[in-house]
Image (tube, rainbow, N blue to C red):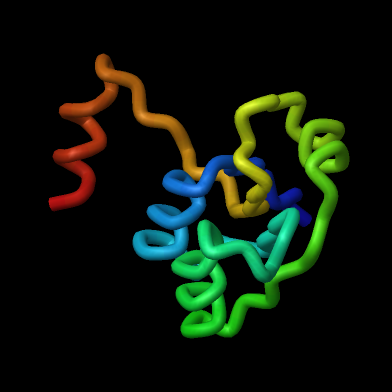
Amino acid sequence: MKKIEKENIVGIHAVRILLKIRPFDIYEIYVSNKDAKQYKDIIEEAKKNNLVIQKITNDKIFEITKVKSHQGVLAVSKKKSEIYENNLIKFLQEKK
């Protein structure tokens, strides 16, 4: 069985974009304060996509991600495969 690769996405803007573009790839969302205005858009978008928001401390986010500028929000999502510039033409031809 193939192991699913996951990645941690942090920051308000990054998580908001992830929710709009790839909500189906999100496994979990954590915020440090569910009542804070700054997370309102994230919480509303998560509800639209039937995703549960869980509470987490800022210290725990840092422990998991090793990122200091996480802004109190963390999403765990399916890892997207990377496309390098030298493979871009081949990738686009395969998509036709």
